[in-house]
Length: 382
Ligand SMILES: *Cc1c(COP(=O)(O)O)cnc(C)c1O
Image 1 (tube, rainbow, N blue to C red):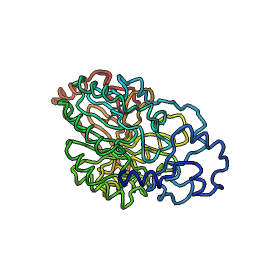
Image 2: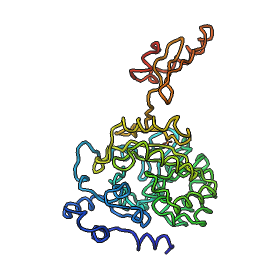
Image 3: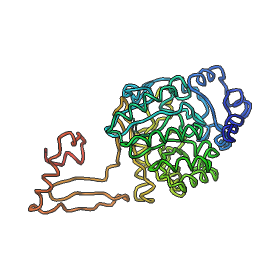
Image 4: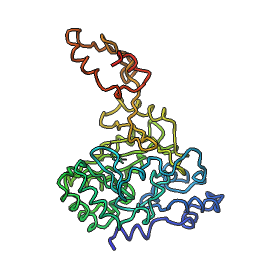
């Protein structure tokens, strides 16, 4: 057993009894019902995350400790992104024209209570490793797929040998240009990032890793060191953060997180609205809170620190960007804009004799004009 596997097995908190023993029964008033919540979705907190909990109910605790609110379902959906409906063969979701999501591992080092895939993550029967051959055949036959995103579960919890095999098999498919790995291991189990693993990943370039940090405290010295090793292996690092109530729904916290990520050589990529998942609804904030956070970042700190704020649309619509409104009006003459500090500026459109170009710009298919009240209603009908 590799040292990281031993660490995960021996030092994780993975039963309610161990959790109660560690933090004291006074924090778990209704243990009977909590057992039900813990049965509904796998429960494990990796050693690094256990160490990070400063007090019950803090932002780290909230992400991993089961909560009675998980038993309340209002408008939550089991498969909120309709991933299973967009799945042509087991373990593949093919939603976009040129890229596919490939689930290669059923397990994680810690289980996030807000997991979008909580319907199947942690259950090897629902993310079956025996079915990978049909997935590989699908990827081989679909020559339009030039980007494969390995996810799960956490792909980096597989053994070195298994990761090597997966990467080599993907690399043997000529039309696959880039490989991506989505992993929370740099945060949850930084010990897993070893020189041996980096040497394997390095052979499959161009390979990108999107990791997942939600709070500035998660960038511990061990996590920062793991990220440095990956970056030194030439792997561009991104971060997919989820906006979570009581964890990071605060512009000050979010700015600190984004700045710390950049300092650790990670470029923030997405900030997700929390998906409308049954069992995770108590984590959801309003959409306005996300817009407020983006507004507090843009212009006030490095542009590199500003992720794309998106809603992954319920029902399988994919990721849809949300941008705070900086355009006051658009006419043939000018665009009226507000900058990050709220000051107004005017940008002149090109003069009439050059508007042939802009007329062509506007002759986009009508589907590019969504019924936004502003600024698009200011444009002439296409
Ligand atoms: C997020 C996602 C992708 C990748 O989307 P990008 O915007 O290219 O990062 C691909 N397929 C599925 C099903 C996804 O959910």
